[in-house]
Image (cartoon, rainbow over all chains, first blue to last red; front, side, top):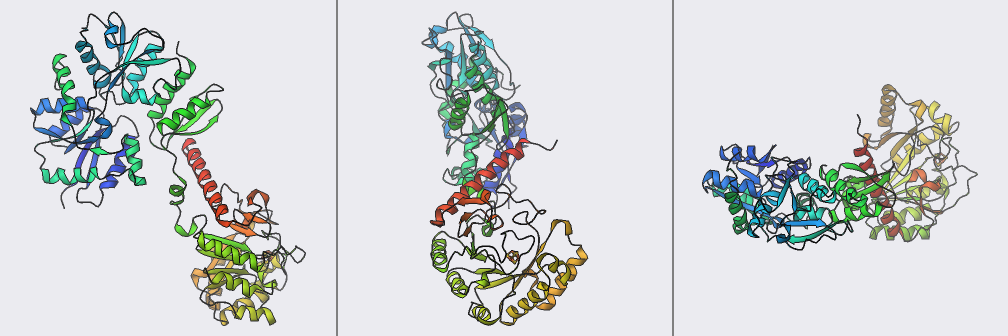
Length: 270
Length: 338
Ligand code: SF4
């Protein structure tokens, strides 16, 4: 029997341990057994993928872009969550604010999350550019509270929201998952309002190098895609990881981030 | 200024988000904010456990459902797998540790063969797998053979008895019972009369041993259960002597049970058994349906005054047990050893 496929993930919360133990358990006894390795940040994880320490990396969108850039495209995305296909950034302001559109941010102060967060920093700046707003037009309040984890902890986004509520910023750019986690504008009545939402883009994916033979990755992906919401044990894992179904990737959803990384001259390695 | 409800929601996201599944966090709440916590939990799939000392206790993740909690127990111990029926409460003995407060003076309070027939039919539909008949002393009832037949028609049945009345018409009743489906369980506390007679009355050991022999001679598989008061815990040596004694009588090792006295009924010392600590074994008496046979004389273990419909009581007990387990799981996670 082949060696188990070694999958890397970043330990951004203690919950990552039961999630990956559950996923490993799901693969146990199949023809695609796996084990996992946890990293403290995405930089180390991508290095480990490229030097062959791990076979597959559970990457954020920025980690995917950086893997593509570092390997000059010699890598592939294997699968992603249904929720990764429909990710978006939400711009929020205090309830009753006069902000109606992203363009209204001219001359205002925007709180951003950690600078390595695609949803709360890199893409928001890109969307500002697309709306004709440069660095001189909008004052950026950068809150780098979870650097290295690409915004996964959500902490910098919560800090950005606090900055808005404390009137240190006029608006904050946050991931749609954080917006959902705080109950949109429904749990905090009269506190926050969404005034602009980005087009959808893709978030995480399982990344492998082209050097990983398809005979090894295909059975693993096939079994992953069979994980079912209707099975209570499998559903527990899906709920913890924030999805209902694993999906085949849609690479078009990364185009905006590739552009943003290029424009903002974000290094391919760090 | 950050409003109080907003602060609360941000705290919930930050603190609960930093937990592993099943762990709990405490988030300070002001009076009236419980609703926000409940709503947040229901949206995000987390479990609002309680408010304690001004803080909301929230467990990460969806609480396990009743079936998931029960799946942790071996199938034969799951609530609803065993059905206990108190045939009657009167007894020819008056043991000092009796958990049902039985004695010759106790009122009979018999369930009656008709009710038992209906109960076992309901039990068959409710996926019960085993029936236990107890009292009081069931052999005081002169229709016990009919009661046993009603049970063994559906289930493997255990009949708890002091084994002292196997004479005359009562011996005839025993003889009419199913050898395949019925196991008499006879109480015997020690290998010599002293301990047994101290709690059960002079001369009772001799007659119980005679009862065990009779039942074995009649071709029954006999189980023997010893009840040991908490302040009289036996030595390993004493237990060995007891096992050898029972081996010699012809009782299988698997059928030799030694257990501590339950702190119930007439017992003043013993193992404390409460609804919180006992895995329920649904128990029906003439007075109602109870959580467990050791609590059948106690209101705190009363599930309902009704004895029908049995399936509803079983469902109620399963749900209550799962709730207790979830609370205990929360408390266990909440009070680490350090
Ligand atoms: S312990 Fe058993 S034998 Fe003794 S009084 Fe109670 S019911 Fe009767």
